[in-house]
Length: 267
Image 1: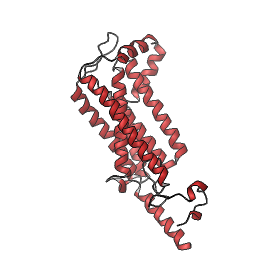
Image 2: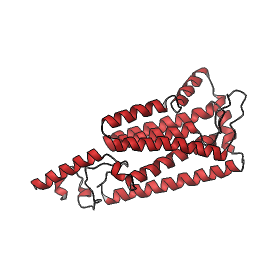
Image 3: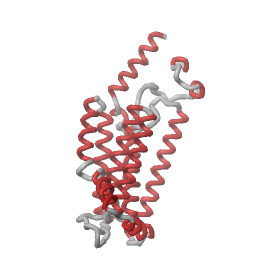
Image 4: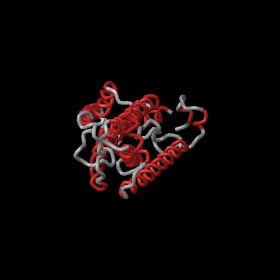
C-alpha cells in the first residue's frame, strides 16, 4: 500500500515509516495500530515514563505510611477544606463521593459492559473489566498490607476499613480513565480528549470529597490516584503489546483487513 492510497494523511506522515499493521485497525492507546512509528514510539516511551513516575511517587508515600511518618500536606489539607465547609458544599461533596462509591461505579460498569457487548466490542469490555476489577482487588490488598488507620475527626464518621490508599479515588481513576481510553479508541482523538478531561475532573472531585468529608488523608487520595493510573497503564500495555492484544476489537480488525484487501484488489 502506498501513501497515495490515503488522501487524508498529512504530508509529514506520507514519507514516515509506519508500524507493520493495517492503519485502519484500532487499539486501546490513543495512537492507532499502524500509526507512524515515531508517534507510536513517543506514546510508548511517554506511557512508560508516566508509569515509572507514578510508581516512584507511590513508593515514597508508601514508605512514609509504613514508617508512620506525619506528612505536612495531611495536616494542612483536611483543616483547610473543613474551614470552607457549608451545607451547599456538603451536598456537592457527598454527590462527588457517591460517584466513586459502590453505589455508582458497579451500576455504571454494568451499563458500559452491556453497551460494549451489544456493539461487539468484547475486547474493550474485557479491558474495562480488568481495569475495574483489578483495581478493586489491588486496593483491598494494599489496604491490608499498609493497615493505616482512618483519620480520627470529631465531625467525621470513622469508616471501618483501612485508609491507604483511598479506594474511592483508586476505583474511580481505574473505571473512568479506562472508559475514556475506550472512548478515545472508538470515537477518535477529539472525543477521547474530552472524555479523558472529564474523567480527570471527576476523579479529582472524588478525591477532594474524601478529604473534605474527613474519610481520608491527603496522601491516601494521592496514593489511590497514583495506584489507579499505574494499574490502567499496565492493563493498557497488556492489551497494546502484551498477550491480550489480539482480544482488542477483533470485529473491527477483521473489517479493516477486509477493506485493505479490497483496496489492494482494485489497485
